[in-house]
Length: 227
Image 1 (tube, rainbow, N blue to C red):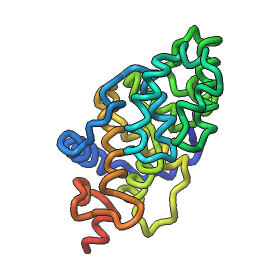
Image 2 (image 1 turned 180 degrees about the vertical axis):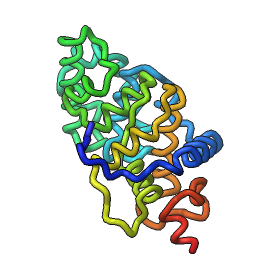
Image 3 (image 1 turned 90 degrees about the vertical axis):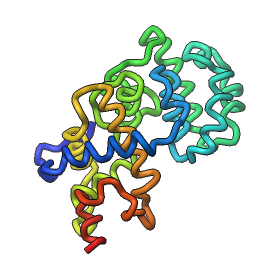
């Protein structure tokens, strides 16, 4: 994961209120998405590849069809490239399909068909960056590790750094996220999902819905906007 020898992440004095409020909000407002109902590493992996640069509504349509055709890593690894491309057709960004196919073959050869459960190993696989590695480790294996995508980074930047400050570097956001993630695996799963959901539904890039935000009282940006 990204790191730096010179920490500049803010002190986490609002960490507990932030975590408590975002988890409570997620319990009542989180969307029921099919990949949130499983801890199967392969199914989580497929969802994460599909969700890269694709809207949730579209992924919900393609996700079950792809899994029906390729229900496990071994089936995907043995498939012809053309068949994988056909199953992906319409989702766009076809490098994702190629990388997922290569990953399946790689895991079948090197890991006996089982996805690694550590982010440090996952990130070595084709098409897997720091976010996807953290997401699979957290969402499939319930590891207490951060998973920082665009939505999460935006939430943490606004809440803990404030929008008037220079944008923090990626390594600072990752360090902050690592400090916030609960140590209990199940709670870490919910926390990562919750912050991601907050960024997707409330703390959006344009016109954030601050009056509706469950963490507005602990958010540096939200307090400034209310003032």
